[in-house]
View 1 (cartoon, helix red, strand yellow):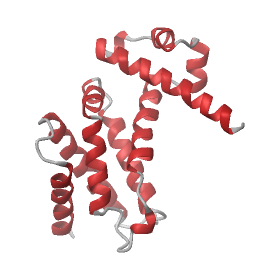
View 2 (tube, one colour; view 1 turned 120 degrees about the horizontal axis):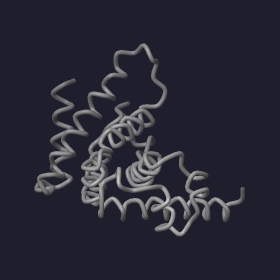
View 3 (cartoon, rainbow, N blue to C red; view 1 turned 120 degrees about the vertical axis):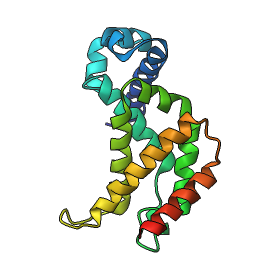
View 4 (cartoon, one colour; view 1 turned 135 degrees about the vertical axis):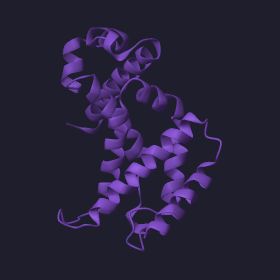
Length: 178
């Protein structure tokens, strides 16, 4: 598949996700059919199922895209061998603030576990190879859980603190726990 075909395929996936997000703003998850999403996106049901297994996979694609393209971590800057640094944290909280409305909608509509899953996957990718039997690997999940809960409360409270303040608070918490 050439670059132009890949861009076209991604554009269709984004249209489907955008249509689903629009519908989620109007009604409950269980009230939305794949047919309705497809019609709103201007694609056939067959196209929907070629791009996504189900509605959940469409949301996973959306959240994964946010984390991958907007929060992507620069391994070159990981001089201390930590999966997390202040710059990454600030970028992470800025992105969460940017997508606040949509993230809260997805959590309200039952997709909170997908957000946690994507945060876990991002931390795993950032940490690189780590033996399955390493106790240090649990630090990834401690961090993800703390970050996930902090994000939800912060978003629900209207992002009163700045992303910089939130990143520093999480960094300080990580240091205390070390």
